[in-house]
Length: 420
Image (cartoon, rainbow, N blue to C red; front, side, top):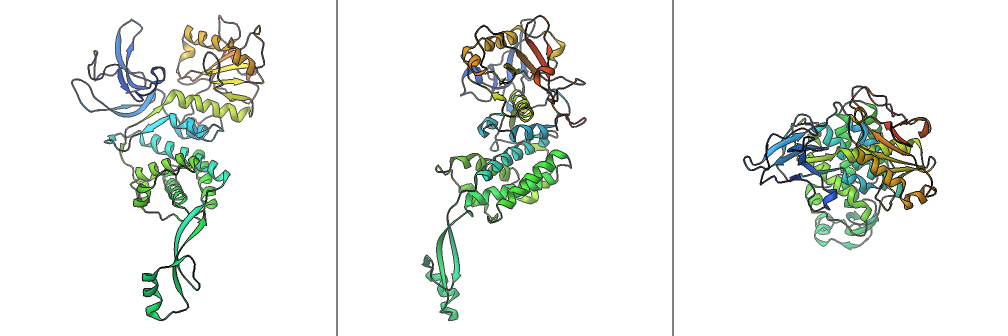
């Protein structure tokens, strides 16, 4: 299937599927994400449709159990690598990116010939971005257990090993000792380095392009910074490793490192495997597009764009301090060819009259705050490259004062992106 297409696995209300396949049922109702959803049509009827979520999931219905369903992007040839890199290497906090996607490695895999080239780069780029930020702060050190045959006692003598290595051979000047050292060579750092090596191997077999070359270069710098750390940590030690509450910032890096190693069964030779199966996973295309646009804006206008500032009426995607403007993304390909929904206008108008947001923009309550809608087009659209001030890029929305729109297309593999 494609995004928003009709799901033919259940044509009427299904007592098993109910309102649809919810991916985060514990979330507040307004924040729930649906892979398949019971949706009202323009004619007032209802039907099951795919949403803005892409990926692969098992779907159960009243008549069929465990149907493998794959939802692909509505737009062909999206350069997901460029999108992931733009998102993950922006200045946002890393916990934002964990909401873009989810992977269930414990579930039965699903056969797919198209999704592997989306799944692996996504995990790797996220992981590398976090490691890069960790290394900028410096690797954490810890007490590491070592053993060595020394010419003086350090720690305690390992009696059994010392007898075998030294006493039986009449080497009375040597002592086989167990001791601890305060070092960067901790199991956590060994796991991170091991996953970096796996990531390097995966990218080496994923094609030669500017995006992978950039990330491969970052991995090389990370490995250089970890040259004092071993990488021969065993799978058993990895699986037994628990989160260290004293170093919370390592949590995401270690979690992603485990995902990468598990994806390739802890065997670096498997990184060349062109498997046609993927674990069930999903990607929120709406959020991915939002963070991709933020990455472009932040790079073009450093220090000027604020992401999701809190207002009384909610959280607009961005505000521009220099322009005194509210900007909001809508992942609705083709929106420029249709009349813009009134709910979008009302949402932006509400933000423009929100007193908390007006204070952030240093605007008065009598000011008319400009609002800009950012959207992608399906094909052959001129896309903003943010090489000039925002007020020189947008075009007005007919029928509304101080309402504008900017087209920012998703980058494509066929044509590349204008955002280098």
